[in-house]
Image (tube, rainbow, N blue to C red; front, side, top):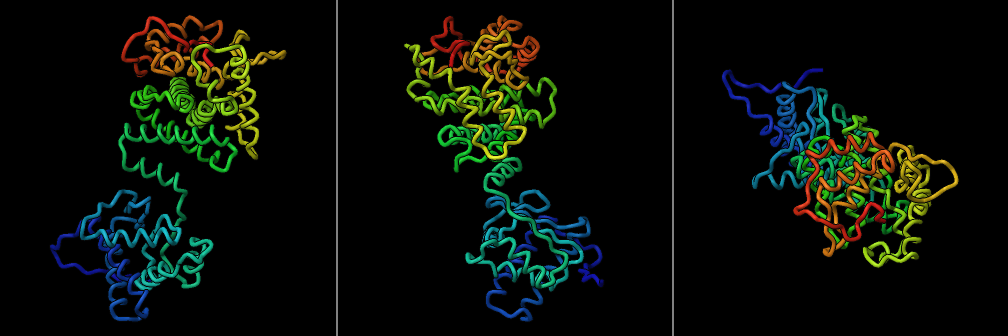
Length: 424
């Protein structure tokens, strides 16, 4: 195949790749707008397509392919963000609009793309409207029908996937951790309110959130763990669940467990208290004058949690492990705690990790402004005292090794009113 080579004079300065990428997008935008009003063989359209091909050829001198992604309202070139200015804003906006309408996440061009392919692809982008039941599949059909070569497309991801990917590209470790933490709060809040099998919550979203938390813990433990002290008394259950998730992942990571296992432990930790959605909020949020009836209701939440999680259709390994942790996270290795059973059930590794994280967060985070939390060192000392009898001694020792990255409370407390290790 004859290449349509762009000729440059001797000693000419090659434009930057970013500048050329913007110019190529500009040509695509012109081609799309022309396709709405002009015939394919219009002279302006033909010349613009040839110009686009020349720019593509120049870009391909240093790249095997040329790739444009659209994530939210951002355009990426070769997976790096292209900055927009006042003179390019309209070009970017129109390209993003057509990509979203066509269900396309990425466009990948290679050397076999001719000027007519670029022209026909641009025209195809303008043919997708709201009447299409599946815009991406319709775009694939058009590419095949028009026999367009050298241009591949990939499908847009869910809004949640786009949100996280955009964060990973544009945010610092600390900002990523903050976004991941807030997103985890949202997801666990939805799970508590609607149930994990409810229409508002998808197991896939939970996994994506936890994957983001895991990545943040691995990248910057100190910044991520610092977020476990941004408590909200009105949403204590949600914050507690996310805190336990972060602490559990940090402990599991310090154990040297592989990333997939960190994800499984993180999911179990995030949903360990899902059974409390079936307990009256006035009982869950009570921190003093707890009656025997209140305790009876609260002690049921591990079993209720399993019932809630069992509503998930076709649960995978991670969700089955989450059911075990939901049931066992208040059991101690000496068989104290609850629920009490006739069978000699020994909590598995995930449950033992979550148990320590659960106790530590209850000790160091107050549930009301009338309570004073223990300091980091005081909480670690209590956990150390309970090792070997109630808690896994090896895990306690490893958790104590996290002291250098665990945040400390702003003040010490001589007494802890209500938030003890037997706290619900």
